[in-house]
Amino acid sequence: MSRATNGLLNRAGLGGPVRFLVYALLGGVGTLAHYAILFALVRGEWAQPTLATTLGALVGALVNYVLNARLNYRTGATRAGAARFVAVALVGIAVNALVVHFLAEVLEAPVLLAQVAATLIVLCITFVLNSLWTFRW
Image (cartoon, rainbow, N blue to C red; front, side, top):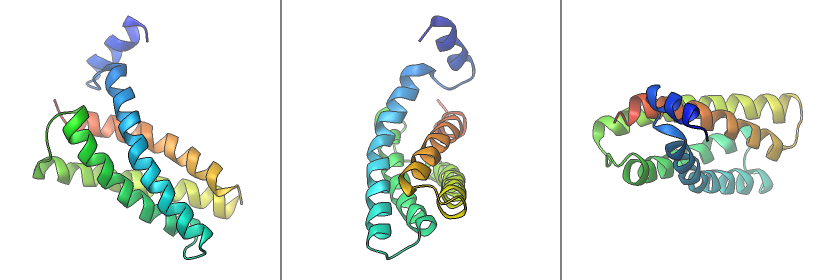
C-alpha cells in the first residue's frame, strides 16, 4: 500500500494496512469454523441457510476474538474488550444473516456465493468497529 493510504488508515485510528491484513488472516480461521458449521448444517438438512450461518458466525466470532485480542491488538482478553467485541459481533452476525437470507433465500443464489458476499461485507464493518472501539490502542 502507498504511504498515503497507510497514513490515512493510521490517522483514522485503524492501524494501517498491516493491521487489516493480520485481522483478515486471523479472521480466516474463524471463517473456516463458521463455514464448516454452516455447510454441515445445510448439507445435513438440519437448518436453513440463515440459521446455519448465524450459528456458524457465533462460533467464528468467538475464535476471532481470542485470536485478535492476543495476536493482533495484543490487548489480551478483558471483560470490557469482550463486552465491546460481543456488541460488534452481534452487529456482524445480524448483517451476515440479513445478507445470506436475502441472497440465498429470497434471490435463491447459491449459499456459498451468498456467504462469501456476506463475509466480505462483515469483514470491513467489524474491522472498523473493532479497531476504533473494541481494541482501542
